[in-house]
Length: 342
Image (tube, rainbow, N blue to C red; front, side):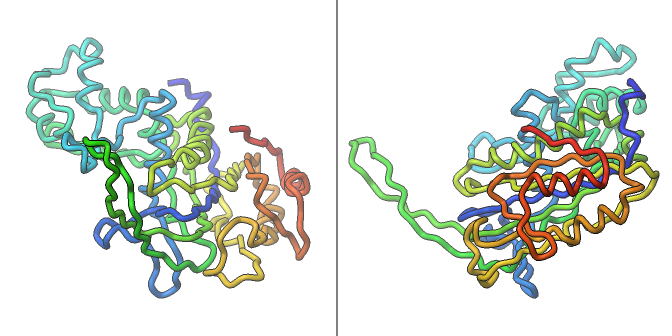
């Protein structure tokens, strides 16, 4: 591991995306309804859903991913699959001291691995896995090996994403038309829950102490930010189509164990419409006044800011509309700025 390339500074991640006429994160225990806080009517999305978006994108572009979602053989359900057996099979020659019976190793069952693994050097396994899989370096995992558990705490952790406004989900019925074997058009009823519109904000922390433990590299962070942006754009299934990334902001600090915190709570939607009447990004301004104030107040502790901004989002600061160039200028007064190009 090249220690010079390992991340040494703490940083915060602010990620915003919106959803139009889609289901950002259905609850399978409640008719797959969008997740809504009944007390506040705020739409929320789990961190697991966001991490899956990133993993799927990284997998698509050829990065090694340890945890992935796959369809079962009947094509109807999905199961989380870990690539431990695949990894062991490919790297057996590097671990001759391991007593492996690969015929007993099955990709879909981790319990089978306990029977297949003999005397394994857990530290050696840990090192090899972390050097191979980017999602382990980012998010960590719990892996069962030979009557023991290897738990790796990931340096990147996100809170649940929350909408910046109240929303009201809708139940939609429709007809899907498909030709029969006799080429006669037939209609099949379809039903699904959607949100008409939701602007969702995620807040994350990259812990520099955990980054040293997993060997998180600088290019891993770049791939994470790319995965947030492009992975969200690539949510093109029937229930997910309608996701658009609007802002990603990565604030890197130069002081150990310090971060501002809760950057998502510094943002506010300003609209002439009531919350539940908002239907598109043109219906409001995103007020960044408090965000920029917090960054300016802590400028001496900020090393670098990386960002990307969707051109259609409308920004406001101190009561006035500001352009992307003006937003970038404000960020530049805080620290070194890198505009991300995805």
